[in-house]
Length: 57
Ligand SMILES: [Zn+2]
Image 1 (cartoon, rainbow, N blue to C red):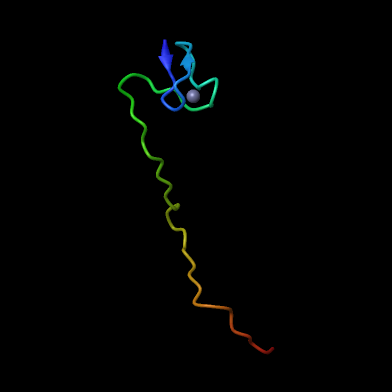
Image 2: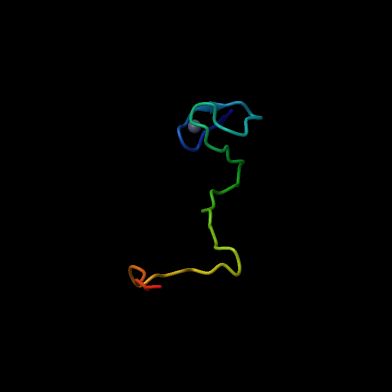
C-alpha cells in the first residue's frame, strides 16, 4: 500500500494523486524536483525607473 508523501494517507497502488490532499503520488525512487519557471527566450524584462514622465503634446 502506497502512502502519500504529503499527508500520509494510504493510497491505492494505481493512484496517481492522493485522494485526501490531492498531492502527486511519488513512485519509489522518484524525488520531488523543484519546478523551475524560466522566462521564455526573447522575453524582455521591463524595469521602470519610476513613474512615466509627463510629455505635453
Ligand atoms: Zn495526501
